[in-house]
Image 1 (tube, rainbow, N blue to C red):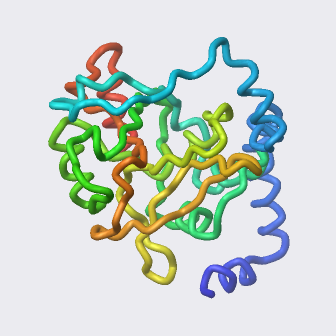
Image 2: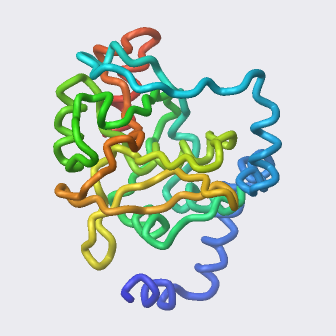
Length: 241
């Protein structure tokens, strides 16, 4: 693989300097995030919630992004590059699948230069108006954007993993994002998951014609029109640059 050859070609002294610099950038974050993704810590985080979650009931198809409440607000632009983002996931004990780790290392996985709050929604395809058991990924994206939502970025997906330590067991959230191609050319998107053994970040099929279960919840960014208060819409736009 070309990436391994590139690492081998770095002089030893320069490589050590890069490692030390990376560690220095991660140190403040590591002290806050250590072991937060392990199964035991997830359970403890769940027990700290003030009230039990309400059971999600099916809703009528939405007519606009404004009809769906913000599910979670996260902060992006807190780490200096994608390598620091991957390191923060490791420091928190959040395991990454092979495809997820690979696309986060690709040049397309850019990181915001400024700290920005981003409002997110998590909706199933059925709530967007799709019928049947599955829907094509490209069709879901098209309708979501038509309703006023924006696609997320790989950074938003990774930061959501780092800022959603209380995720319930059995929940898998698809990140509605432009797919990033692996070194082999396969389009991949991210999935925020808790399979029971701890919090993980995995990759999944990002092809336009990929079949997505209609009941699966997909994470999108609110549009500028849907959330103008306190500049959240503008902040989401910055996150997509």
